[in-house]
Each structure stands twice: as C-alpha cells, then as structure tokens.
Amino acid sequence: MKFVDTNILLYAISKDPLEQRKTDIAIAILEAPVGELALSVQVLQEFFVQATRVSREGALPHRLAEEYIDHWQAFEVQDSTLDLFRAAVASCRRFRLSYWDAAIIEAARIAGCDTVLSEDLSDGQSYGGVRVRNPFRSGPHRRAPRE
Image 1 (cartoon, one colour):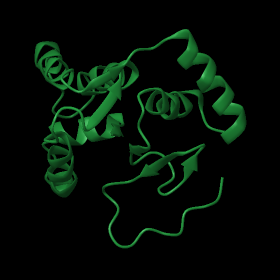
Image 2 (cartoon, rainbow, N blue to C red):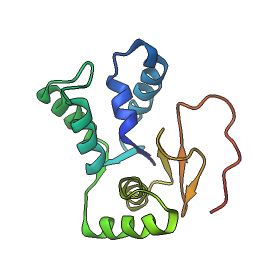
Image 3 (spheres, rainbow, N blue to C red):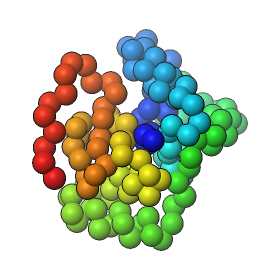
C-alpha cells in the first residue's frame, strides 16, 4: 500500500495549465482501487486548508472541498493519535525532519505503507523502512541514500 501526501490531492484539483502534467499524474494515482492507497487525517486537513484558502487561485468552496474529502475517505485514513504524535516526535529527532513531515512518515508506517508518494520529501530517501517516491520526477531515480 502507498501513502498519499497532500500535494497529490492538491495537484488533482489544480486548474493551472502549467501543472497539467502533474494534475494528470495525481488523478491517475487517485484512481487506484480501494486498498492500494492510504492517507491521514493530517493530509485531509492540509488539503482542506490549502484548497479553500482565499488567496489561492481557483480556491474551492468549502462544500466542494468537503465532497473531495468524502470521496477520498474510501481509502484507508490514518487517524491522528497520541501514538502517532510520539512516533513523529521521535522521527523528528532521528531523521531531522519537521514535525509535519515526520507525522506523514509515521502515519504511513502505522497504516502499513512502505512508500510515501510526495513531492515535498527527499525522493528515494528511506526513513526507517518507509521510502519516499516523487511521482512527478522525470527520469531515472538517483541512488537512494542509506539510512
């Protein structure tokens, strides 16, 4: 199972012609059968905040953002828990990540995912067995750094 970061959801709704390639890729990812993808409450929260932000070009009305979120809840959604919080804090120290990035990694781990699809984390990097893959990156992947 793969874990989807917020940027995948945001590209899926983008109307920016300069992002069309990324939009197509994001939509294809999100067409995966139920059981193949997971996300977290944090990802849904970040999507809602960013997608409805008044300063965002093409901001979604709240109701439409909620409809997208309702649809994506068909995938496994990892709740925010005290155990997740503690694991993320430990990953902040271990991997020198921001708390929010560490929470993504740890939500993926708890959900049983071995891959995080994200544009925001280091492509190819493994964080204690959870590897990041940037689905928008063209060309061959660089050799992944060791843990």
